[in-house]
Length: 415
Ligand code: HEM
Image (cartoon, rainbow, N blue to C red; front, side, top):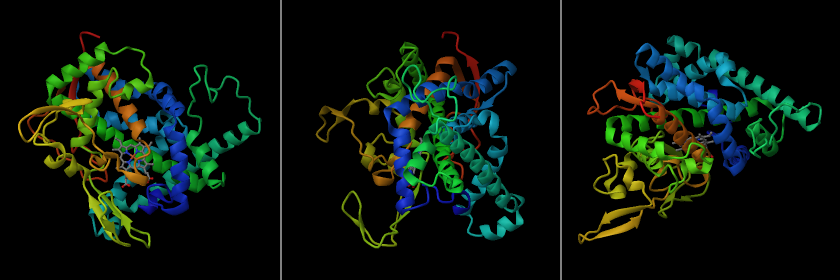
């Protein structure tokens, strides 16, 4: 993985990890930045989400909504990571990045990859693709750094440019991640390191969020009653919502968020995790058991999401109501009790738990709710595959739907 991801947060330990972790925390967790994400970045790229639907409807064609979700996540997280409009500028990046990511992922399942990469055309062009991706990233990071430096030295006229705090007091993206990285890491001209760092954030956010959206759509397509209930809630929700309302479990999109949580439970985008204790001391897990130096722990959020021990006898069912703040439970002696559903990140590790837990959890949930609302309020979708047939997970580091998610869409009569 090092070839592509270099010294970015996904792979490194120690002070390089810490600097990127702090930068990511500052860039993506503050309320102001989440506002900027929900109010500026997501709507700015809405056309990437809707245009393929409009085109398919006009031509009476099917469309692969998983592909649409990938394209939307690419432009959204491209802007977040590189402050660049990927819909216009990424032609030299997207194709080599996708090819290089595929080869990197294949290495996990192919013990003979050194040999096959020498034989297959995709393997042979891997180094060239990695070089293109790095060059593109460094170019973006360099021009962004120069702009930030000039701005800080007061050498640019920022009138007419979206300022860091716009009229509504919402912070705009404006190289947010890079500013934080330079603050934490120093070395504002170490463009290779900074570009690797940005690439890691893009990679961590892009496919996972797109796949989560695709699996959520998959579940609602197979459950027309749930699709209808979702539309009812979304129709009733105010058109102008606060970003915090998008994900509030007791807010106007309570059912929407329950649907998303349920899809994440049954189809976690990171289905399997492997971590090694690379320190020289034992590490205690949440249940108190110790992992010695050089020992490896493997767990599966996919299996845990389906465990009847954690979720009860109906674990296999897609049942959004289990996420409502209050759920009815039947105790062993047959009495019904009302009980708030509380699952710790250790029982529901879809975003991992502990010090290396996901930094983009809030961003992902905001994007998922936003995109679902935009699609479900506009379109009725009908699956073009037999809904009683389970779809399989494709082979990758994350969990795509094998073969995509093909639907036929039409405009809703009532909007
Ligand atoms: C539904 C979407 C997402 C899921 C399910 C998800 C899941 C995860 C998981 C399981 C990990 C731990 C990986 C490991 O250590 O093996 C992780 C780490 C991480 N995620 Fe996410 N993620 C999602 C979206 C995002 C987004 C949108 C971003 C940022 C824009 C992001 C940034 C990161 C970063 C930077 C890490 C590494 C944290 C560290 O090592 O300290 N993720 N994510």
